[in-house]
Each structure stands twice: as structure tokens, then as C-alpha cells.
Length: 501
Image (tube, rainbow, N blue to C red; front, side, top):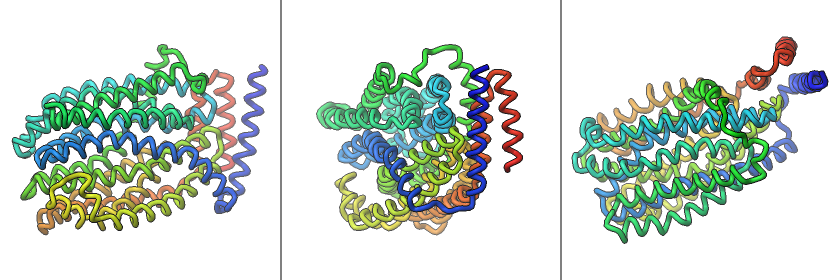
């Protein structure tokens, strides 16, 4: 009875809070609110920027070293990394984004046990998916030849991707654990473990690529070893740290019960994320069909690697706004969620302008970090203005996607990505690259046309989001497994909420 009374008091406080938001919903964010929210976002975003950059540099370091072995090594490894992203890593990452909704809102509502169980459910689900993907990877050479790739490049790329299979399973565990930490704003453990892993990866890659007889295959092996090392560090911290005491739960049958709910969000999440990710990989694959495929593939892979590296900065802000929005919606604070979304837009715009200007100023230099071939470096330098524009477009898109993950409207993002990137961007890339004979430059311009449309549509949707409705939906989902008495109270609460909106 006491629990029921406490629950009713909490419900009344929530109603008063939502009513207050309804009265203020048309007000713009105040300067003091912006500063306070910027501090909260920065607390999460700054470490996540470093984490994402460190994680991505694990691949980049290996690619840089492989690139100095020659055009064949660079182009085949680029194809392998692209295909591994398309068929494996992007799928696992996209599915794990469901936890940004489920775990983030559960943490905001103080349902800590549900957060832990959903993390286990995600790990179990992703390992199953990784098992199926690994079968495809073991037969990748035949697939590459079937789609028209050069047989020599196909053979080298297939050997490279086979050695990435261990990294795939490490990724299946890492992605849910990373969301587990992120949604609780526990970014420091991830920062420390990824920096330690990167420090270990650099000499390991050098040894395996240059000092051993493995060559470019040493780069793939180094990636797999480093990914597993990072997973081990994070699992040990989760198991023994007091910071995880509230959300650390024993493995039970609830793990299997949560699989269905996980997939309800994971499927639209993976569609939204993968449609974005795959569009760029399609461009890389199309470049292999152009005249002088080794040059075109190498140049566009450098462009994509540069953008992905610089995306670590807006990704940190995207992770931060996803966490802030999901936590506040779970706690029943729609105004705070709205303030987080609006604040991050201004911060991101300023950051992207600074990064683009810096990149443009160094356009004749950064190509040498990937290759010693003057032809490749000159081609990369000529693409610099387009890369700068891509940095801005993709950065803003990442922020709006973070808001989508925090709210749980990934299905809307999936429709936007499908229309903008595949009905507009990819066809435009093919037309400009092959029909107008603009080659690699045309492919890149075309996909950026689609990315610009995608960003504009996501901005419109974000600006028109009904934050009160999102908070109600989060509450209904989080409390659907309460006792019968509490379920009755939730039904009454929902009816009252509808009267406000």
C-alpha cells in the first residue's frame, strides 16, 4: 500500500511537471538554460569524441600502414574494410543503437534492472547475427568476383576480411556494452580503455604489417586483437566497479524475454544506420568499376576515411544528445529533452565550421598520411572542398540521428534515409560518375546531394517533434510490466495526460 501511495505521489509530480511544460512549450530556450545544457552535453560529448576517435583510429592506423605497401595493398584492404562495414560492423552498430532508446529511457526512469537485462539481451542477439555474417565473410572472394571486382583485388580483399572475423564477434559484445556505459554517462571508463587499446594497437600494427611476413594481412589481425582487448577491459570494469553496481544484474531468463523488445527497436535502428553507412560504401564499390580502379578506389577510400575520422567530433555530440534526450524523456522531463536537442544544434554548427576551415587549410598535406603515391595525394587534394562540405552535412545529420535514437523514432529516420540516399543520392552519384564521366568526383557529389536532402528532412522532423508525446510514449513503454495495481494507475495517468495534449 505504501508503494502504491508513493507511486501516486510520483505520478502527481510528473503531471504537474508536464502541465508546466505545456504552458511553456512555445518558449525558446533561454541563455542560462543553454549554458547549463551545454555543460551537461560537454560532460558526455568530450569523452565520447575521444572514445570514437580512438576506436576509429584502430582501423585508420592499420590502413595507413597498409597504404605504404602499395596501391594493390591499399585498394584491396579498402574494399575489405568497406565490405566488412556493409555486411557486418554497420549491422551490429545499427542494432545496438536500439539500446540508446531502451537503456537511456530506463536509466532516466530509474529502472536499473531493465537496463542491465536489455544489455545482455542485445549481446545475445548480436552474437547470433555475427555468427550468420561470418559465414558470408568466409566466402567473400566469390561474391567480389560476382559483382565485377578485379580478381587480384578480390583475392587480397577476401584474405583480409577473413582475419576480421574475430573482430566481428568482439564488436558484437562491445557495441551493447558501449551503449550500457553511454546511457549512464559513464564515459570515463570507455575513454581510458580505448586509449590504452590504441596505444597497444600502434606498435602491434607496425610489427604485424612491416616486421612480420603478413603484410597487409597483419593489419587485419591487429584490428581483431585490439578489439578483443578493449572488450576484455570494459567487461572487467562492468564486473568489478562500484559505478556499475546499480545496473549490474545476474544473467537470467529475463535476458531472453527482452530479446523481442530489443528487436522491435533494433530493426528500424539498423535500417536507419545502415542505409546511411551503406550509401558511402556503395560509392566505394562503384569506384572499382571506373577506369583505373586502383586509383579511384584509393582516393575515395581516403576521402571516406577522412570524413569518418572527423565524424568522431559530431559523433560525441550525437551520443551526448541521444543520452540526454532519452534520460530526460524516461524521467518525464520533455522540456529538458527539447533543450538538449536545440542546444546541441548550435554547438555542432560552430564545431563543424571550425573543422572544415582547418581541413581546407591543410588540403595539400593530409593526403600523405595515407599514401606516398603522388597521383593519389594530388587527387585527394583536389577533393578537399567537397570533403569539407561533406563534413558539415554529415555532422548535422549525425546530430539529428542522435535525437531520433533518444526519442525512439528510428523508423521515421529509416524512411528519410531510404528516400534521400537511395532514391536521390545513389542514382545521382551513378549518373554524375558514369554518364557525365566525372568519375570519382561525380560519385562523391551525387551522394552528397542525397545527404543534404537527408539532413534537411531530419531537421524539419526534429523541429516539429512533440516532446510531451515522446515523454508519454516512453512512460507507457517503461511501465508496461508493472503490477496490476500500478498498470491501472498508469492507465488513469495516460487518460489524464491525454487531457493535457
